[in-house]
Image 1 (cartoon, helix red, strand yellow):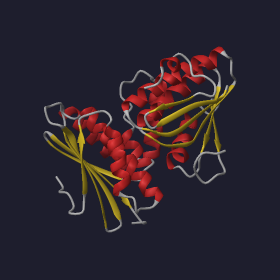
Image 2 (cartoon, chains in turn red, purple):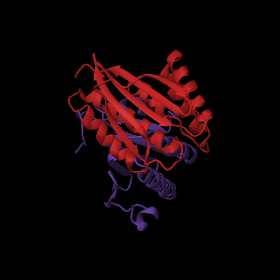
Image 3 (cartoon, chains in turn red, blue):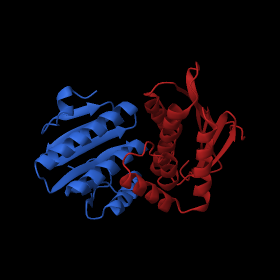
Length: 161
Length: 136
């Protein structure tokens, strides 16, 4: 599992629904000096990852559902989410989605997922967050799982930093 | 939270705020959305509002309904799902959804073209000429 860069700004996400809005504000502040395109992308990544932490983190007495870090180094912006997951199956599912994105056209994967949702409105989970990060945000994703901790890392160029 | 009357049908000219999202039925056939949509509360109310609005559109036999999202700067993926569901209902009911988008907002530029590909005869995209923000 990779370690946090020294310059990473980290948010401990509280265990409450409105915390996604905290995450959005955190993202905006973390990359306030970057290009608008980069700010949009980082906000998207932080919010999608934050929502996943709130939805899928292990329920426990801990006050926080996990952490989200943002760092900029050598012209690359990096968003890192770390949390404890309830089920290894969820972690496996995330790993499979991320692996699929590394070898496939993300626009086509995104379109295919929207088509599935369009045809099957009763599907319980949208599962669009990671796809949007890659398609709209231009991020390369990677992940690692060492039970019970799941880490997702999203990286993209940040030319305006 | 939305006022109770809104969940029974949004009224013309009434501006409704759900946390950081603002919704207004600017014309009988146009909904304007602005702000951001990211929290579960806003998502739930937004989905309910779209369901109610769909019923109103069908009852009024509206052929084309416009949705101005130019000033909707950010949404999470649950909102994208809500748009997918709305497009699906519109396709079954036989009315057109015309989304007014801003080319300067990345998610508008990328996601609405994919949404249109789901139901090309149901979805129209009208891109504003302005470089950003709400059109007048």
